[in-house]
Length: 328
Image (tube, rainbow, N blue to C red; front, side):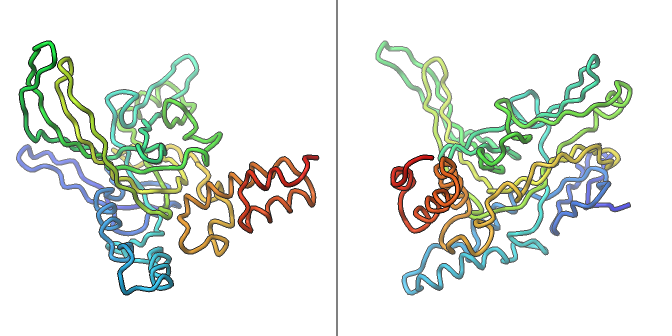
């Protein structure tokens, strides 16, 4: 039996909260059982390690472009903390949700004998990538009295929120567990007796690897109105990742119920994973470029297809390449 990771033993002492132990080493995806109350990696610690890494700092005045590009490429093997590097396999626990719009939820259909696990997907404001929010913080920063042109007044409360999560590229997950308008979904066939026994302790675990550009930070705001007197400023901190699988497990025992494969790196163009990508081209940009090129050139066959690819690779725009040769 292969056992993965550290967990957290539930405390029975009311005055002492249980201590959470996060992984500081790569996750072992070959494990067939997890430690009880397994918590995986700490998304906030990893975001901090990536966002403040000197290896990803902006180009310095006296640094050559070649040295800057080499530093960017070298980040892939850069040690973050513990024995983790930017290319280590990671595992993140999806928080329990109060409903389908937040966290992970589990439901059972007794007639179909299907257990459905879902996890909510938000949207990254700048890139529109789907995001799994793993942690959320909120604090009130002040208040003021506001009025409108009709003389109505309201006490407006200001809040500063922060979301910490994982972002994925939507178009890479066609026909996979992320390709659902209402979030990620996994369905498992099991008896009502087994579902009743397991459901109280079920959790979801995202198994993934980070990719360039590694992380993104953004802000958004929501203004207050008289009918909705709350003003929000929200920070979004997201790691960019390749989703390999989603595990369903019983946190009370560590029993792994299911490993749903999500494709991982097999979904990405080969030329974006190696020397085919320029050192200064973010991984996500390479994927979009190659998929757009392949989409345009799919209208051609044989030599015309390869000529279309060569023209785009040499610098022609997809539109120009598409109009340069007759369609078969």
